Length: 188
Image (cartoon, rainbow, N blue to C red; front, side):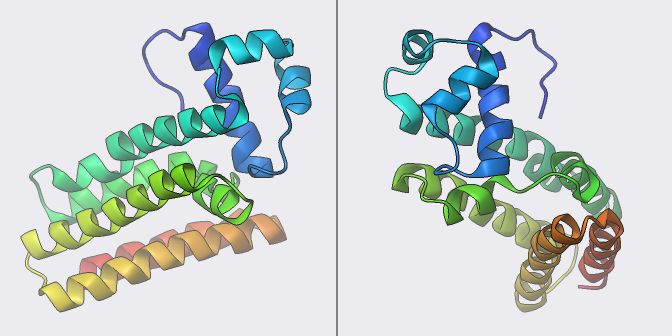
């Protein structure tokens, strides 16, 4: 989830926190772990995040939401054919999940005791992604009913395949389900 602009020390810290939270979940990460991984003492961590681990998790969630909005959701809102818009969205999805090799922050944080504000932030972006797919499908000729069904199916395929691919260390499962999601969205 890199960004083209130059990173501040806080941005670099958020990137490290993102990797930790997406891999270990909220409860699986301690301030001591963060200190060890970053080389920063507790006082330095609290300098950047006075609210502690909860503020860190919220910063990670906001950063992830911004990335998803720019690389997964925004391509659905541009003009163009359905095929072009779906391809652009799925390129973002594949980058986000490293072609099925990286865990989903939403799954990691919502299942591992993240504070309600963090869960709400992440759930909101999932709802926005679903709504953007539906809107794109309707804009490109699908009925609202078929758009809702196809959008829900596509996200379920992608997220479910990610879990299975990671559990079995078989990223080809993710790749296949992304292709199936593409086909379903094109057929809606």
